[in-house]
Structures are given as structure tokens and as C-alpha cells.
Image 1 (spheres, rainbow, N blue to C red):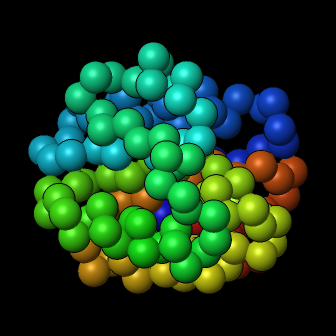
Image 2 (image 1 turned 60 degrees about the vertical axis):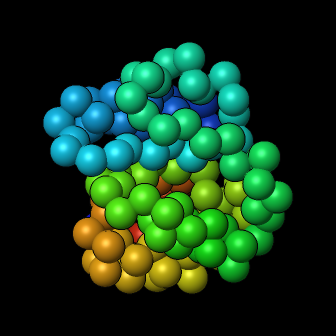
Image 3 (image 1 turned 180 degrees about the vertical axis):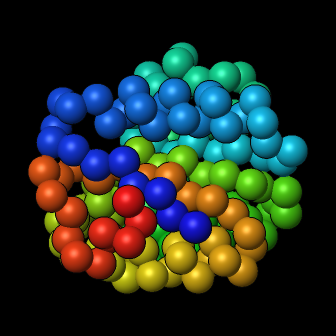
Length: 133
């Protein structure tokens, strides 16, 4: 399952995803992951959340990003939720160009029974994302 938090730049998406991650970790019976390219976010997260600064792993394109996510799940079978603050930023793509990432995350989530929550900087989301809102 994928959940999208979207809005224009500066609209509070990061605060909402951090709040959702902190709320989720309190209820989760497994591991909660938070992926971002902003190390300062770690200070706002519950210490039980596994914080990952994606810039430390040389992930710069769709294929490597999806492989990175698959590797996380392969290395830890009890991940229940993955929060991603800006997958379009991680891959250097425009929001309307990341449909393949969403397709892959949808399949991965269904197979591994993992929930993904992602932020998207856009006033309106592309059609392929609307089913995740």
C-alpha cells in the first residue's frame, strides 16, 4: 500500500510525514524506516524509527532506488512501514516521471506486506498517483 502526502513546496509535507512516522512507530509490531536526504530530520523522529539518509548510499536513479528499497526489505523481514520524504528528489526526476517507482513500490508493498508513505511536491498529482491519496 502506498499513501501520498502532497502539496506545494513549503506546505508542511515534511512535518506531516514526520508526525505520521512518529504515530506509526507507537503502534507498529515491527520496524519503521524513514528515508530522506535531510539529516536534520532525525532530531524530530522517535528514536525507535530507523533513520536513513539516502545521500550516504549513492542512490540517484529509479533503478538503484527501487533496488535499495528491496535490499532494505530483504535484510529485515519485519519492516512494517517505510516513510520516504521525496522519492522524486532522490532520483532527480520530475513528479510526473516517477510512475515506474510507484508501480514498483506497489508490487513490493503487496508482496512484502509493507506500507509506504511518500511526500510529493506538487500542487496537483499526476493521474497515476491519484489512487494513492
